[in-house]
Amino acid sequence: MAGRRPSAISRTFGKDGADMVENTEVPIYVYCASGVRSAMAAKKLENNGFANVTNIGGIHSYKGELEK
Image (cartoon, rainbow, N blue to C red; front, side, top):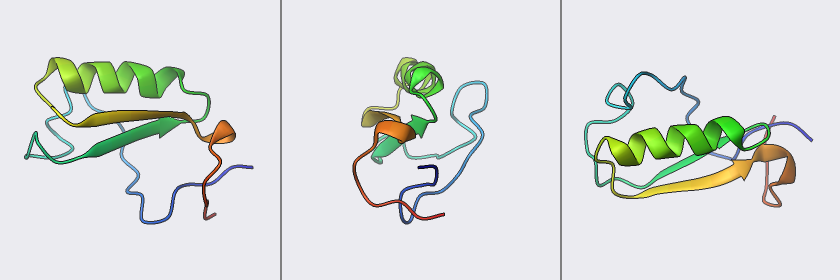
Protein backbone atom coordinates (compact mmCIF):
# COMPACT_ATOMS: atom_id res chain seq x y z
CA MET A 1 0.00 0.00 0.00
CA ALA A 2 1.39 3.38 -0.95
CA GLY A 3 0.49 6.66 0.62
CA ARG A 4 1.64 8.98 3.37
CA ARG A 5 1.11 9.44 7.06
CA PRO A 6 -1.80 11.73 7.94
CA SER A 7 -0.65 15.35 8.40
CA ALA A 8 2.72 14.55 6.79
CA ILE A 9 4.45 17.31 4.88
CA SER A 10 6.13 16.04 1.74
CA ARG A 11 9.55 17.57 1.14
CA THR A 12 12.36 16.80 -1.23
CA PHE A 13 15.45 16.55 0.90
CA GLY A 14 18.00 19.23 0.07
CA LYS A 15 21.72 19.40 0.54
CA ASP A 16 21.84 19.78 4.33
CA GLY A 17 18.28 19.89 5.60
CA ALA A 18 18.40 23.59 6.42
CA ASP A 19 15.92 24.23 3.64
CA MET A 20 13.35 22.09 5.46
CA VAL A 21 13.02 23.68 8.91
CA GLU A 22 14.80 26.40 10.85
CA ASN A 23 14.38 24.99 14.37
CA THR A 24 16.87 22.13 14.83
CA GLU A 25 15.02 20.92 17.95
CA VAL A 26 11.65 20.26 16.31
CA PRO A 27 10.78 16.53 15.94
CA ILE A 28 11.37 15.32 12.38
CA TYR A 29 10.18 11.92 11.14
CA VAL A 30 11.61 10.75 7.82
CA TYR A 31 10.50 7.93 5.57
CA CYS A 32 10.64 6.88 1.94
CA ALA A 33 9.41 3.90 -0.05
CA SER A 34 11.94 1.31 1.16
CA GLY A 35 13.87 3.03 3.97
CA VAL A 36 17.17 3.52 2.15
CA ARG A 37 16.79 7.20 1.26
CA SER A 38 15.20 8.00 4.63
CA ALA A 39 18.24 6.52 6.41
CA MET A 40 20.54 8.76 4.36
CA ALA A 41 18.32 11.80 4.98
CA ALA A 42 18.18 11.14 8.73
CA LYS A 43 21.97 10.85 8.90
CA LYS A 44 22.43 14.12 6.97
CA LEU A 45 19.99 15.90 9.26
CA GLU A 46 21.77 14.62 12.36
CA ASN A 47 25.16 15.57 10.93
CA ASN A 48 23.83 19.10 10.38
CA GLY A 49 22.70 19.61 13.96
CA PHE A 50 19.12 18.39 13.93
CA ALA A 51 18.67 16.83 17.35
CA ASN A 52 15.30 15.10 17.18
CA VAL A 53 15.29 12.95 14.02
CA THR A 54 13.44 9.63 13.77
CA ASN A 55 13.75 7.38 10.72
CA ILE A 56 10.46 5.51 10.31
CA GLY A 57 11.99 3.54 7.43
CA GLY A 58 10.02 2.30 4.45
CA ILE A 59 6.42 3.39 4.07
CA HIS A 60 5.63 -0.04 2.58
CA SER A 61 6.31 -1.67 5.96
CA TYR A 62 4.65 1.07 8.03
CA LYS A 63 1.77 -0.34 10.06
CA GLY A 64 0.02 2.93 10.93
CA GLU A 65 -2.72 4.81 9.13
CA LEU A 66 -2.00 6.10 5.62
CA GLU A 67 -3.81 8.52 3.38
CA LYS A 68 -3.60 8.58 -0.38
